[in-house]
Amino acid sequence: MIRFNNVSKVYPNGTRALNKVNIDIQKGEFVFIVGASGAGKSTFLKLIMKEEEPTSGSIIVNDTNITEMKRRKVPYLRRTMGIVFQDFRLIDKMTVFDNVAFAMRVIGARPKAVKKRVHYILGLVGLKDKAQSRPAELSGGEQQRVSLARALVNNPSLIIADEPTGNIDPEMSFEIIELLNEINKQGTTIIVVTHEHELVHKFKNRVIEIQGGEIMSDTGAPTEKADVKIEIAEEELAEIPEEIAEEIPDVSSEELNREALAAIEDEEAAEE
Amino acid sequence: MRGLGYLIKEGVRSVWNNRMMSAASIGVLVSCLLITGAAMLLSMNVTSVVEEIGKDNQITVFLKEDIDDLEAIQKIGPELRKVDNVAEVEFYSKEQAINEYRSELGTLFSELQGVENPLPNAFHLTMVDLSQYETTVKDIRAVEGVDIISDRSDVAKRLTDLNRLVTQVGLWLVAALGIISLFIISNSVRMTMYSRRFEISIMKSVGATNHFVRIPFVIEGVVLGLISGIISSIVIAFLYEAMVSAVKYIVPVTEIPYSELAPRMTVGFIGFGMIIGAIGALISIGRYLNMEGGEILGW
Ligand SMILES: Nc1ncnc2c1ncn2[C@@H]1O[C@H](COP(=O)(O)OP(=O)(O)O)[C@@H](O)[C@H]1O
Ligand SMILES: [Mg+2]
Image (cartoon, rainbow over all chains, first blue to last red; front, side, top):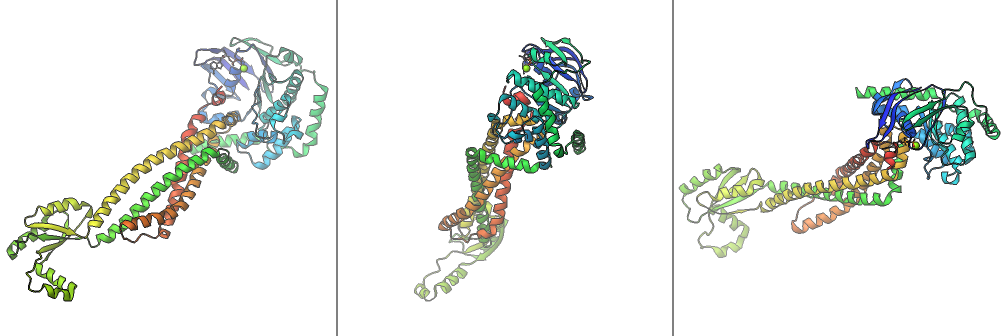
């Protein structure tokens, strides 16, 4: 799914954020990236979503060498991933529903598909009742779930979360990771950056530690999945999808991927 | 393209959300369009008047009083014909002139009976191109035996000069105001983009194409241009009446009726406004499209 080959990143000001990093993350894995502030964790994520370019080395995402990827194809790469930020990055003047719908609208989804899909995803993260609320009216944990819903709404095969629990209290943090774990069980690859060691230890996932831009340790994929769970969270998650099973979205990841490919081909055809 | 409805709604909405700046942009663009339009209307009218007058752009060349014998006169004719830009030359004797006076003045003329004919011999001639009036007149003056030149095309000549002035000043004004309009519209759109940089960064992170990010802002510019075009089309109709009476005060001419010009002006205003709007918007957009995530937000 993701492979870093001898990747180094030196920022224009001379800061060496990553140094000859080699990482291999398989499809369906759940990986924690840990390390002190300034270790290079965010840089690692930015390279995956092609927000930054590596200074040397190559990066493969979904069997594509993204280091050589053309600029205009980058949007289609990003459609295959959902991104969650520490500061939620929700639009204050939009409702919860519109914040999530935004991610679909700006890639040209049909209004009917948007409506179905957003309701489904809000149910999945347990925010069905908050659809018409504004972000400011929600707790930190709820806001992060909206942000997660937005990351999920286009049915990505990869979720990238940069310190998703950095701004919320520990109990809520646990719920968020638990939710990500559930999503991971459906086959979505998940990469979570965090420096909360306690949280990491509660889940038996692969942990990669970065220090000073280099890989310090890598537990590798665990042979056995974590069985630590919060009862309440599990109940919630178990119930909701059934409730709305009827409204299961008509936007499958296959359809989206096909559309993305078609769009790329259209553009290529137009260029010639 | 899919999602166009959403994009148009977004573009129109930001005109309203950004209304102070929108009003300023529309104000400047309307002024630009009106001045351009006024210059064009003036020019069109002057041209039509000049054409009308130009149809009998005859001037009269009076000969010196002492030239009275046929031989001398017959020499001058071909000389005049040789002058550049002279089309037709026709002799007009002092007898013909006095006879014309006689018939015009009728009985009054009897008072003048017996007085020696005081009129000089003359030539009537026409020019090919009225705009070269001055040079031609100078050349005619240089011909031996020519005394004074009188003409009825003086008004036409002045109008031609005016037309040239209007066209020149108009062009400069249009260029200057066009640039100001572009600047202010691109500024307006830039402000919208700045106030929406957060949304733009999210759009990019969820995989919106640059095309998609761009469209609402272009639409905002086009809508500003459209509104300006419509306002200008209405205002110019009233302005035209005022202009016509002002011009009529100076020169008694018949204007082109506005109904004849209205379709052209309206289409021109709206088209020009929308193009300026779109270009103005595109100027601002490039900067944002080349940035990523935190860069857009200035972090
Ligand atoms: N855009 C940038 N320009 C220059 N230096 C940067 C930039 N982004 C990050 N850095 C530097 O690179 C190093 C790694 O940063 P980052 O990847 O954000 O670390 P982490 O997320 O682990 O805290 C830090 O020293 C940071 O100051
Ligand atoms: Mg970081």
